[in-house]
Amino acid sequence: MAAAAADAPCAEGPAPTEQKAGKTPVELKDAGNLAFKRAQVLRRTTAGKQYLSDAKACYIEAITLMGSAPADEASLSLVCTLHSNLAAVFLLSDPPKYQEARAAAEIALAV
Image (cartoon, rainbow, N blue to C red; front, side, top):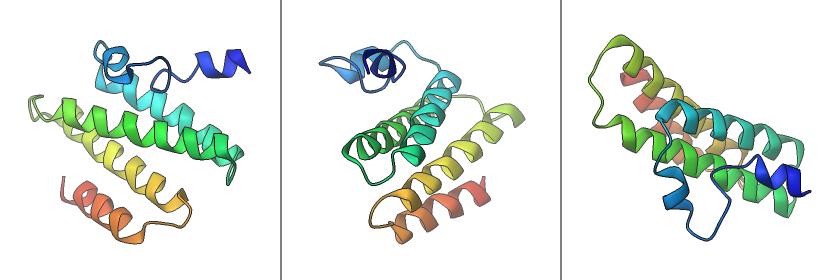
């Protein structure tokens, strides 16, 4: 169990914002993807809900960091992926948050 907690970089430690401060948006996306996959496996358990919360936090942090990035093809593609992933997080939550998922998906399509 300790090894699994060590792999969740967005959920570790007393101050999560300090731990995420040095990460790039791509690293945050990867951490969010890992947490999301774990949330799918552990669906409707306390651990699954925590992993889903971690995925959401990672994706939102990455989107926030991308706000100051130059608008080139690679960054726009990453922003689109992040919003799509965030929509999936909203749909996996219990109960599903359809309005939030739709808003995130519409932003992804607009990018």
